[in-house]
Amino acid sequence: MKVLVVNCGSSSIKYQLLDMTDESVLAKGMVERIGLEGSLLTHQPTGKDKVILDPEIPDHSKGIALTLEALVHPEHGVIDSLQEIVAIGHRVVHGGEAFADSVLITPEVMNVLERCIEMAPLHNPPNILGITACAELMPYVPQVAVFDTAFHQTMPKYAFLYGLPYEAYEKYGVRRYGFHGTSHKFVSQCAARLMGQHMTNLRIITCHLGNGASLAAIKYGRSIDTSMGFTPLEGLVMGTRCGEIDPAILPFLMKKERMSPDQIDRYLNHQSGVLGISGISSDFRDIETASTAGSERAQLALDIFAYKVRKYIGGYVAAMGGVDAIVFTAGLGENSPAMRDKICNGLEFLGTRIDHDKNNIRGKIAEISVDGARVKIFVIPTNEELVIARDTKMICSGLM
Ligand code: ADP
Image 1 (tube, rainbow, N blue to C red):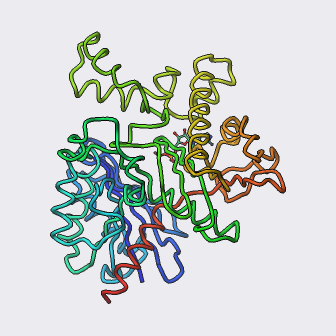
Image 2: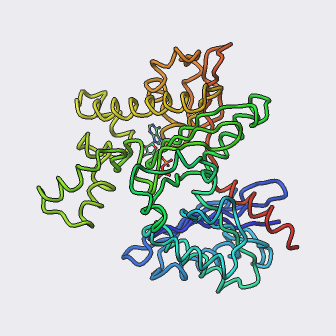
């Protein structure tokens, strides 16, 4: 059973073709700069050389068509015919309150996705374009939507409502939704397996630390709180996003700097975070290098980032009445022993401590807490594509 996983951004398409009989990746790749000059497709068939093509790619439809061509290409392809693809799974960023789980895409589902555009104007339109392009090119293949927001739909109302007039929620759906749900779900399940326990016995804090970063409090298998909110801007300081700030700063800065709503949106989403604080880069590798070389602002960016994560961990321990495991994942969480150490430094009161030797790893599954610690600390590489493929397989198996 071969499943194609598609993740469409505004100017990019990431894809993976998986053989779900053994969950192996047959090929993966990325279409970049859609609609821009210099568009390209990078295709990596497993066990063969990477191929880079640079045709004109004016829209997502062409990007999907090129992806499918690459998969069946006589030299760098990995399947003989598109008929081998039995289902397509799409990452969809925002499912609003309508979806607490992955879903088979039907015309009714598409209508709801259209309605969610208002809440995710940057993310949902390209997701919809990808689904439509696949439906045009492979009309008989079932498609599944897997939502970033779905896993967090278990949050209680007191955790997801803001202190705004209740009408803002009723009229416009203004509430906290949370994101990175597929990742939080995947790594928490993996941690439970490593502990030889069922999720329903565990309280886990998952730290997804990449360009976008969020934490989740997962109590007995259900997400009860997460740091992102109405949009992925809330919560931690991130690569270029400001995270939580006093909302009064917005009108203040808009007046002072004469910024329009679009300009302040850009300022908060693309010019802030560790990029804005350090003035150097949004990439933690650059910031760690600059800090080692003596840059005070790079050091400050790292200090602020780690402090926020530690504060959230403390908050989530209180929210869950304790914690059994803390998991680090995504680019920074998987690859930076220094940041993991910095975050955990001060959490010893929880009954945990990082083992510095065990922590000296990158990009692989490991328990990094000292032997015998009551609270385990893990590094677990995330795999959102695999979750999407698994959900797609599960939902589509019943149709075949
Ligand atoms: P996203 O999917 O949100 O774009 P990733 O999960 O790929 O992001 O994480 C990207 C970030 O991870 C980079 O910006 C970088 O800061 C960080 N990162 C990746 N590798 C390392 C490393 N070896 N050391 C420190 N940070 C790293």
